[in-house]
Image (tube, rainbow, N blue to C red):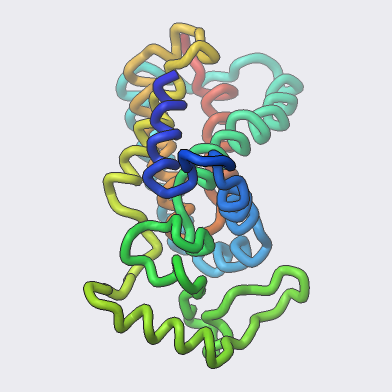
Length: 252
Protein backbone atom coordinates (compact mmCIF):
# COMPACT_ATOMS: atom_id res chain seq x y z
CA UNK A 1 0.00 0.00 0.00
CA UNK A 2 3.04 2.26 -0.04
CA UNK A 3 2.39 3.36 -3.61
CA UNK A 4 -1.18 4.38 -2.78
CA UNK A 5 0.08 6.55 0.09
CA UNK A 6 2.60 8.09 -2.29
CA UNK A 7 -0.09 8.82 -4.87
CA UNK A 8 -2.22 10.47 -2.17
CA UNK A 9 0.71 12.64 -1.05
CA UNK A 10 1.44 13.82 -4.59
CA UNK A 11 -2.21 14.62 -5.26
CA UNK A 12 -2.45 16.48 -1.95
CA UNK A 13 0.63 18.52 -2.86
CA UNK A 14 -0.89 19.35 -6.24
CA UNK A 15 -4.23 20.34 -4.70
CA UNK A 16 -6.11 17.43 -6.25
CA UNK A 17 -6.92 16.00 -2.82
CA UNK A 18 -8.65 18.30 -0.37
CA UNK A 19 -9.89 17.91 3.23
CA UNK A 20 -13.51 18.86 2.49
CA UNK A 21 -15.99 17.17 0.11
CA UNK A 22 -15.51 16.49 -2.67
CA UNK A 23 -12.26 15.04 -1.36
CA UNK A 24 -10.79 14.57 -4.81
CA UNK A 25 -10.99 16.86 -7.83
CA UNK A 26 -11.97 14.26 -10.37
CA UNK A 27 -12.35 16.84 -13.11
CA UNK A 28 -8.64 17.69 -12.85
CA UNK A 29 -7.59 14.06 -13.25
CA UNK A 30 -10.08 13.56 -16.08
CA UNK A 31 -8.73 16.67 -17.81
CA UNK A 32 -5.16 15.38 -17.56
CA UNK A 33 -6.07 12.04 -19.11
CA UNK A 34 -8.28 13.59 -21.79
CA UNK A 35 -5.64 16.15 -22.77
CA UNK A 36 -2.82 13.63 -22.99
CA UNK A 37 -4.87 11.12 -24.97
CA UNK A 38 -6.27 13.71 -27.37
CA UNK A 39 -5.58 13.78 -31.09
CA UNK A 40 -4.10 17.27 -30.72
CA UNK A 41 -1.41 15.93 -28.42
CA UNK A 42 -0.76 13.00 -30.73
CA UNK A 43 -0.34 15.37 -33.66
CA UNK A 44 2.20 17.42 -31.72
CA UNK A 45 4.03 14.23 -30.74
CA UNK A 46 4.26 13.17 -34.38
CA UNK A 47 5.93 16.49 -35.17
CA UNK A 48 8.62 15.63 -32.60
CA UNK A 49 9.32 12.16 -33.92
CA UNK A 50 13.08 12.75 -33.90
CA UNK A 51 13.16 13.35 -30.15
CA UNK A 52 10.89 10.35 -29.58
CA UNK A 53 13.12 8.18 -31.72
CA UNK A 54 16.14 9.15 -29.63
CA UNK A 55 14.28 8.36 -26.38
CA UNK A 56 13.08 5.01 -27.76
CA UNK A 57 16.54 4.02 -29.00
CA UNK A 58 18.32 5.03 -25.79
CA UNK A 59 15.70 3.30 -23.68
CA UNK A 60 15.89 0.12 -25.75
CA UNK A 61 19.68 0.14 -25.61
CA UNK A 62 19.69 0.61 -21.84
CA UNK A 63 17.11 -2.14 -21.27
CA UNK A 64 18.87 -4.67 -23.49
CA UNK A 65 22.36 -3.86 -22.22
CA UNK A 66 21.49 -4.08 -18.54
CA UNK A 67 19.09 -7.00 -18.93
CA UNK A 68 21.52 -9.20 -20.85
CA UNK A 69 24.70 -8.18 -19.01
CA UNK A 70 23.08 -8.81 -15.63
CA UNK A 71 21.83 -12.24 -16.70
CA UNK A 72 18.20 -11.29 -16.14
CA UNK A 73 17.32 -11.61 -19.82
CA UNK A 74 18.55 -13.90 -22.53
CA UNK A 75 17.46 -14.02 -26.20
CA UNK A 76 14.95 -16.83 -26.57
CA UNK A 77 11.39 -17.47 -27.72
CA UNK A 78 8.99 -18.05 -24.84
CA UNK A 79 6.12 -20.21 -26.09
CA UNK A 80 4.60 -20.37 -29.56
CA UNK A 81 3.93 -17.58 -32.02
CA UNK A 82 0.19 -17.86 -31.40
CA UNK A 83 0.71 -17.20 -27.69
CA UNK A 84 2.99 -14.30 -28.61
CA UNK A 85 0.20 -12.73 -30.68
CA UNK A 86 -2.27 -13.15 -27.83
CA UNK A 87 0.23 -11.61 -25.47
CA UNK A 88 0.59 -8.67 -27.86
CA UNK A 89 -3.09 -7.78 -27.36
CA UNK A 90 -3.07 -8.31 -23.60
CA UNK A 91 0.06 -6.29 -22.85
CA UNK A 92 -1.34 -3.23 -24.63
CA UNK A 93 -4.13 -2.92 -22.07
CA UNK A 94 -2.19 -4.20 -19.10
CA UNK A 95 0.39 -3.09 -18.19
CA UNK A 96 0.99 -0.48 -20.92
CA UNK A 97 -2.24 1.53 -21.12
CA UNK A 98 -3.30 1.15 -17.49
CA UNK A 99 0.07 1.98 -15.95
CA UNK A 100 0.77 4.92 -18.26
CA UNK A 101 -2.61 6.49 -17.49
CA UNK A 102 -2.20 6.00 -13.73
CA UNK A 103 1.48 6.75 -13.16
CA UNK A 104 2.11 9.29 -15.91
CA UNK A 105 -1.11 10.99 -17.03
CA UNK A 106 -2.78 11.22 -13.61
CA UNK A 107 0.26 11.93 -11.43
CA UNK A 108 2.17 14.50 -13.48
CA UNK A 109 0.45 17.92 -13.70
CA UNK A 110 -0.26 19.61 -17.00
CA UNK A 111 -1.10 23.13 -18.09
CA UNK A 112 -4.85 22.50 -18.11
CA UNK A 113 -4.97 21.89 -14.35
CA UNK A 114 -5.76 25.59 -13.65
CA UNK A 115 -3.92 25.98 -10.39
CA UNK A 116 -2.94 22.37 -9.70
CA UNK A 117 0.12 22.63 -11.92
CA UNK A 118 3.66 23.06 -10.72
CA UNK A 119 4.88 26.37 -9.27
CA UNK A 120 5.86 29.09 -11.69
CA UNK A 121 3.79 27.70 -14.53
CA UNK A 122 1.98 30.55 -16.27
CA UNK A 123 -0.27 28.06 -18.04
CA UNK A 124 -1.81 27.14 -14.70
CA UNK A 125 -3.80 30.35 -15.10
CA UNK A 126 -3.88 30.37 -18.87
CA UNK A 127 -3.38 27.18 -20.93
CA UNK A 128 -1.08 28.08 -23.82
CA UNK A 129 0.54 25.66 -26.26
CA UNK A 130 4.17 26.29 -27.26
CA UNK A 131 4.76 27.70 -30.73
CA UNK A 132 6.30 25.11 -32.99
CA UNK A 133 8.38 25.54 -36.09
CA UNK A 134 5.26 25.01 -38.18
CA UNK A 135 3.28 27.79 -36.50
CA UNK A 136 2.55 30.84 -38.56
CA UNK A 137 0.60 32.98 -36.10
CA UNK A 138 -0.26 33.42 -32.48
CA UNK A 139 -3.16 31.04 -33.01
CA UNK A 140 -0.72 28.13 -33.16
CA UNK A 141 0.14 28.80 -29.53
CA UNK A 142 -3.48 28.60 -28.38
CA UNK A 143 -5.46 25.55 -27.20
CA UNK A 144 -6.75 23.20 -29.85
CA UNK A 145 -10.51 22.99 -30.06
CA UNK A 146 -11.07 19.24 -30.19
CA UNK A 147 -14.70 19.57 -31.29
CA UNK A 148 -14.10 21.93 -34.20
CA UNK A 149 -10.53 20.65 -34.83
CA UNK A 150 -9.11 24.14 -35.24
CA UNK A 151 -7.00 26.65 -33.35
CA UNK A 152 -8.74 29.40 -31.38
CA UNK A 153 -7.49 32.96 -31.52
CA UNK A 154 -6.89 34.48 -28.06
CA UNK A 155 -9.04 37.43 -27.10
CA UNK A 156 -8.03 40.73 -25.51
CA UNK A 157 -9.04 39.55 -22.04
CA UNK A 158 -6.89 36.43 -22.25
CA UNK A 159 -3.89 38.47 -23.41
CA UNK A 160 -4.43 40.92 -20.54
CA UNK A 161 -4.47 38.05 -18.01
CA UNK A 162 -1.31 36.66 -19.55
CA UNK A 163 0.40 40.07 -19.22
CA UNK A 164 -0.73 40.51 -15.60
CA UNK A 165 0.47 37.03 -14.65
CA UNK A 166 3.87 37.62 -16.23
CA UNK A 167 4.16 40.96 -14.41
CA UNK A 168 3.45 39.45 -10.98
CA UNK A 169 6.26 39.72 -8.38
CA UNK A 170 8.52 36.70 -8.32
CA UNK A 171 7.24 35.33 -11.61
CA UNK A 172 9.78 33.51 -13.75
CA UNK A 173 8.89 32.60 -17.31
CA UNK A 174 8.61 28.90 -17.90
CA UNK A 175 11.00 27.51 -20.48
CA UNK A 176 9.66 23.95 -20.44
CA UNK A 177 6.60 21.98 -19.42
CA UNK A 178 8.49 19.95 -16.84
CA UNK A 179 7.37 19.73 -13.23
CA UNK A 180 10.01 19.95 -10.49
CA UNK A 181 12.65 17.23 -10.43
CA UNK A 182 11.48 16.07 -7.01
CA UNK A 183 8.00 15.44 -8.37
CA UNK A 184 9.39 13.57 -11.37
CA UNK A 185 11.55 11.40 -9.10
CA UNK A 186 8.61 10.78 -6.76
CA UNK A 187 6.38 9.49 -9.54
CA UNK A 188 9.14 7.17 -10.74
CA UNK A 189 9.67 5.89 -7.19
CA UNK A 190 5.95 5.19 -6.86
CA UNK A 191 5.98 3.40 -10.21
CA UNK A 192 8.85 1.13 -9.13
CA UNK A 193 7.33 0.50 -5.68
CA UNK A 194 4.04 -0.47 -7.33
CA UNK A 195 5.75 -3.61 -8.68
CA UNK A 196 6.36 -4.79 -5.11
CA UNK A 197 2.71 -4.90 -4.01
CA UNK A 198 0.56 -8.00 -3.51
CA UNK A 199 -0.62 -7.98 -7.13
CA UNK A 200 2.91 -8.75 -8.32
CA UNK A 201 3.47 -11.88 -6.24
CA UNK A 202 5.93 -13.71 -8.50
CA UNK A 203 9.56 -13.84 -7.32
CA UNK A 204 10.70 -12.14 -10.53
CA UNK A 205 9.13 -8.87 -9.34
CA UNK A 206 11.30 -8.94 -6.19
CA UNK A 207 14.47 -9.18 -8.25
CA UNK A 208 16.53 -5.99 -8.01
CA UNK A 209 17.44 -6.33 -11.68
CA UNK A 210 13.76 -6.24 -12.64
CA UNK A 211 13.24 -3.09 -10.55
CA UNK A 212 16.16 -1.41 -12.32
CA UNK A 213 14.60 -2.30 -15.68
CA UNK A 214 11.26 -0.91 -14.46
CA UNK A 215 13.03 2.32 -13.53
CA UNK A 216 14.62 2.58 -16.98
CA UNK A 217 11.27 1.93 -18.65
CA UNK A 218 9.45 4.42 -16.44
CA UNK A 219 12.06 7.12 -17.03
CA UNK A 220 11.88 6.68 -20.81
CA UNK A 221 8.08 6.79 -20.88
CA UNK A 222 8.05 9.82 -18.60
CA UNK A 223 10.52 11.63 -20.83
CA UNK A 224 8.32 10.89 -23.84
CA UNK A 225 5.31 12.40 -22.08
CA UNK A 226 7.10 15.50 -20.80
CA UNK A 227 8.71 16.10 -24.18
CA UNK A 228 5.55 15.86 -26.26
CA UNK A 229 2.59 16.25 -23.91
CA UNK A 230 1.04 13.10 -25.37
CA UNK A 231 0.66 9.79 -23.57
CA UNK A 232 0.60 7.66 -26.72
CA UNK A 233 4.38 7.45 -27.33
CA UNK A 234 4.92 6.17 -23.80
CA UNK A 235 2.07 3.68 -24.15
CA UNK A 236 3.55 2.27 -27.36
CA UNK A 237 7.06 2.02 -25.91
CA UNK A 238 5.82 0.45 -22.68
CA UNK A 239 3.70 -1.99 -24.65
CA UNK A 240 6.37 -3.16 -27.08
CA UNK A 241 9.14 -3.34 -24.48
CA UNK A 242 7.09 -5.54 -22.13
CA UNK A 243 5.91 -7.71 -25.02
CA UNK A 244 9.46 -8.19 -26.30
CA UNK A 245 10.68 -9.05 -22.80
CA UNK A 246 7.94 -11.64 -22.26
CA UNK A 247 8.27 -13.08 -25.76
CA UNK A 248 11.98 -13.00 -26.51
CA UNK A 249 13.90 -12.20 -23.34
CA UNK A 250 12.05 -13.65 -20.36
CA UNK A 251 14.18 -15.92 -18.21
CA UNK A 252 13.45 -17.13 -14.67
